[in-house]
Amino acid sequence: MPPRDPARLLPADPSTRSVALDLYARVAGSPIISPHGHVPPSLLLRDEPYADPVSLLVTGDHYVTRLLHAAGVDLADLVVDERAGRDARTVWRTLAAHWHRFAGTASGYWIEEELDGVFGITTPLGPDTADAIYDEIAAALARPEFRPRALFERFGIEFLATTDDPLDDLSEHAALAASALGGRVVPTFRPDRYLDPDAAGFTDHVDRLLGATGHTGDFDGYLGALEDRRAHFIRHGAVSTDNGVEELFTVDLDPGEGERLFQAVLAGTASAGDRRAFRGHMLVQMARMSVDDGLVMTIHPGVLRNHSTATHTAFGPDTGHDIPIATEFTRGIRPLLERYGLERDFHLVLFAVDETTYSRELAPLAGFYPSVYVGAPWWFLDAPDAIARHRAAVTETAGFYRSSGFIDDTRAFLSIPARHDTARRVDAGFLARLVVEGRVRMDAAERIIDDLVDAIPREVFKL
Image 1 (tube, helix red, strand yellow):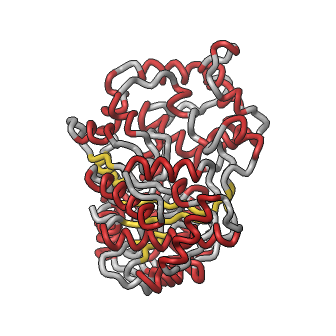
Image 2 (cartoon, helix red, strand yellow):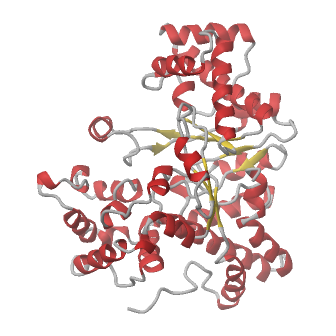
Image 3 (cartoon, rainbow, N blue to C red):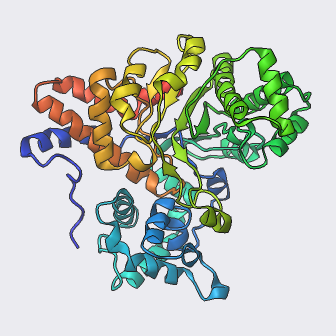
């Protein structure tokens, strides 16, 4: 089969495409800075070969499994289980049988990018080609150049942030830092289960937190315990915190009210309003801690987790049924910004899955507050057309330099270069149109495309 079109995702108009190709060429091979993702550090530390094509491209990638599930495939049929007569090749054939359903989707594009860019496979996936492609990938995975550390360096990953529980001892990160890995891998402080009274096992998590740090069981001790764990993360290279909430609501309370709410949520006597206030106040406390210790604060609201109770019960979280909801930012974030929005060196990155907020709320917020940056299109919006809509919605108000730089937010290690390349191509096309329309000079566009993959994420995440 012929190679993939080198101008894919770029504008169709020949003159604009020519400019876009020049801009894309400047950054096509630039190192990857990935300040938010979910690749486990153990993958790189153990450096074990991938078992098969399914563990590489299907297992754990909820972009893939959710669409197969929507087509009627039981999620259990996507799990390799030799006892049930379901080996990896069988699962791969299931993917191939449904591959036509992925046409036009971001996940379909990424997998084709991975097959071509990593394995040199341009043969279309389908029932007739499934076994041959499976065998070609499996043969490659047996070679040392396809082990995780070799791929990490081949991909040109300069910086990779993982997502970690506050009580993680981070020994794997310490071992990676002491190894000869070519790039930097750092943890990210993810405290949601310790801040949300409605999270499963909240009281147990708080008890573990206090026990691990030796702090007292009052609100001040609880805050001190979180501060201690943040310091532990900073000593292991962390640059940011990751806060996921369903509703973006913040409230700045006095210490006495904070103590009352804390004791009520631990005792299980807090009302729904009290629990909401506690969550909102803890976001303000997280901002206060970021002002004190310098960690970048990221918030990604607006997702209803585990929408299918039956699926969550059978297969657990992160299995493809987290669904976006409408999100309001301006009023919800105001108490936090009233207190800390003008603080020097405070960086707050706001992500959205509700793209109607881009031009209405996020761009105006980032266009005024020096602390606020618009997070890159994230989750369901990190696809080519959605990235282009994000640029159009945000740039006229906030410019390019109030954005975070691209965020791949992935558990699928092999998709990291594909996702970053997608963003680079879309940005090149967007900038090319501005150049051809006489809205941006070519020399300015060249600087912007360079900065989007390097200077901007370095600035936002204080690298």
